Amino acid sequence: MVKPMPRKTDPRSGEDGYSEGPEKVFDKEAARILIQEFAQDAEREAIDNLVEETRSSQQRYWRWKNRGAAAFSRAEARKSIELFLAGEFHTWAEIDGLNERARGKLLDNLFAMKGIIPDGSDRSVFQALLENQIPQEKIRMAASDALADFKAQKGPDSESVIPHIVARLCEIYEAMTGTPVTHSTRSRAADYTPDPQSHGGRFVLAMMRVIDSKTRDTRVASALRSVIEQRSRSR
Image (cartoon, rainbow, N blue to C red; front, side):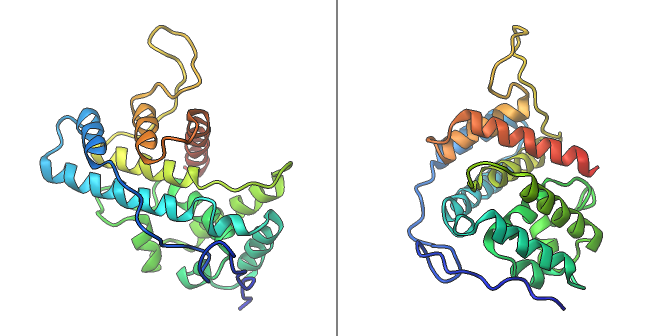
């Protein structure tokens, strides 16, 4: 088996490229109000669970933002994915061995795929990954898409965890409403705006403001569009 590239230590955090640090303050009440607004028929226990899912997603977002993955260049991430695809197995052990930037992109692609988890299952994509229950062809598809993206990227090298948190917020919205997130920039007045105007898009944008109020709405809208396009390609 071909082993992925050894990890490089991120000087800004721990040896694994991440820094736990103190938890970011989570505006639980603001998150609850939003969830109640967008899922009016949800029961209290379901709302509590969704609030906790959002809090957990926020902590992961702040733990990853400008850390781990940002310590690796596109070239390093691309090489890591190439070695991964050259390997015989594609289990969680191999995914976990990728450098943070390569792994993050592969996971972004997996989380954005539809149909990985059967309808009605209470298992998350991440849980299925840990149990090696994700079909190998889906993992290879996510890795191949990641490699293509790294090769296609031009200009200044940058890394963002925003698509990952946006994909998680889409999952949260879909869990609470039972309907998929769509993307539209047409307002009720039939005018085009830079912000998402669909019901799900407005939820993602509003919840992202709770999670990180300094993130520009245009970046969230762009990430949402990319996540939905990736899902469409994966169907």
